[in-house]
Length: 283
Image (cartoon, rainbow, N blue to C red; front, side, top):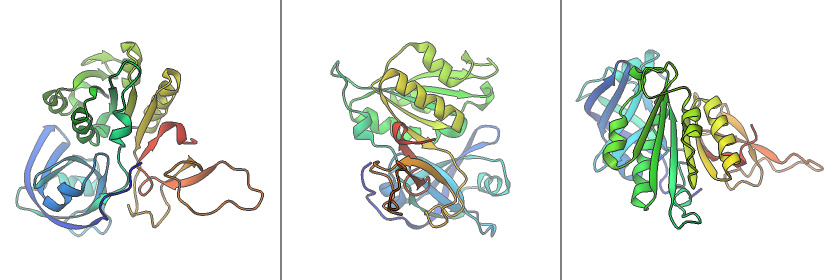
């Protein structure tokens, strides 16, 4: 993964716009020029609700450009409901950008045919970190196809924003109410396409299925892991995942104990991740 280009800092932002494309999911835009400039696809922020809640909420950055960033918020608890209900003019503190995002240069590498086609797989609000990734991949000359799934058609959010960029979009729903009837990983398998690389975000069972698909197809995949973060900065070690010790993302500590043969270490999803190469995870 490329090294982070900017250290995280606290950004005092102002809500500039709000839209609710489907009930319970809000895209909140904020004036945050320094954060917009520093954020890379796949990074996230810790957001402190203005009502006094002490614990911040970890949210992936959906859009970042000019003086504006946006967050995709699923209003499922008291913190996210408060954030989703904010109106333009509200002040909001964010710590970020945090974590390591997608390695777009590696994902956009050309295959044997001389071209690159990257498949993006999103489950539910796992769509959030993929819009910036899609834009960056297109800028690098890669073809991009989005496979996007949700439980029902009413939970599919903002696919038109990807289509407007020039991304080919295929949809699935668990209940068959829109698009392919089944899981998004089944939709991808049914397509019969063999991309040069995969990138995905969604629930853990979906990501494991993507990792298996990548192995079967002989291509690499980057996965953005979903987790509930306590601190978001790697201090508490509450969000770890087994990672190959030889990975460039592996933390340098603790060193192997004398005689230790274990080939993995525990990496923090919020610090070394949330994006990892699928073949380096030891789930």
